[in-house]
Length: 230
Image (tube, rainbow, N blue to C red; front, top):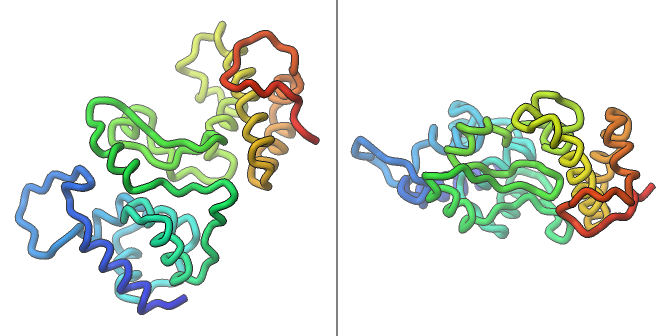
């Protein structure tokens, strides 16, 4: 990776943001422009020490997940996101396939919603961004890894995910979630969606039943009623 240019890019982007843009209320006068390093680190889900070392060109190569966190914390555009990945020695995510980028405009909207929980999710049920109230109500789901990132996966593999639903409504919710994932797999056709489906088929007999239930009469959030492709 290009440690020097990466360090410069991070510092310039951090100093270009204002606390007000991110909904941060500053109670003390700031000696330098932009955000503090600890504010960026917190929003990116990394330690302040590691972020500081990145800006000082002393850190090891960041992982793609760290770069995704920095993309959101620094409100980067798609072009800026791709530049960040290249500076860090990684290939930028393919824009033509499913992309986890959340635009600065949408992130700014989340920050302005102070009276309601709001979050941005993929069609696989993965939370990409949350406002403060959503984090307080639902917990921080942006730092989950592997299949556990998906709310669909957690629904079929963890009883805790169903705690807020009455038992009599859970079967219908299962069918709707399976239908949503079926539609996402057909629409995406990518390895990530296929891996999530395969993992659920292995770990959840209920999902296996629901995913093959093409004629069920329960309402669904999708019009696609085809069985999951093999």
